[in-house]
Image (cartoon, rainbow, N blue to C red; front, side):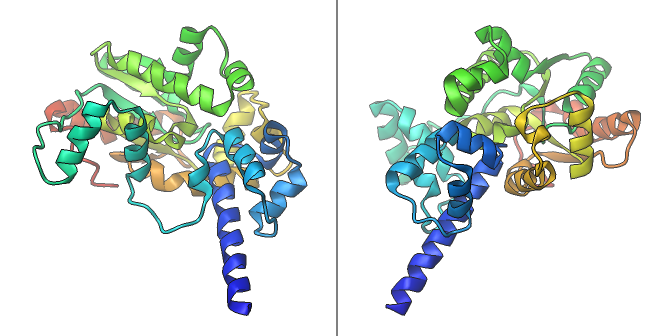
Length: 301
């Protein structure tokens, strides 16, 4: 009985950790998750600590509120690194594409493999990292267009990001984010793209960024992120939460392995804007000199 009890305790703790990580990955405070899911903040705290023996129905509500797949919260053996991308591709695939994928996985014809065309430079990182400011400066210096993905989403849908999330939830916003990115790629002109901090939460969209752009992680200290966000007058839940710094650190911990897949990292901690911009120019110099070399994943990742 003790062995079974220990196993169940371990399962609940692992489940709680997954919920906590998924929530942080999406940049949601516990308070926001409670409001969107309709489940009390206290109950979510118990779930995340491994003390809540949650029903499958409530867990479905939690995953739905986060725009996540229910199976991603169930603790099992760790899947392959690209499993989430493969799974989501399979869900959208036609029967012919599935047949082709099976043939490739079985060691058959690999002619279906393709490489995405070079689309430019994408800046990823947490809100307040300086992606927009540095992106504009870089685009002006190299003569490319500058695009903020969130602004593009708002333009295409006639709604603010906050309104989109309020009306359609996280899942709806991520669908619109992917659609906006696809439309940008169809322009076939090099750009400097500033992405939203949570783009790494959607496997297919993030894979599209990594395969189409030379990607740079704009990094800063948590205190700098928070100061910049508040300096911009951003009063969204995370920035206004009493436990804001704790939430911010949790978000960073959950996203860092994904941000680290970028081709390069620019740490702006303690730098002036001009010094950070200069460091970014140095970081992208290789791809500006030889765009055809793009496609090789980062030496830093």
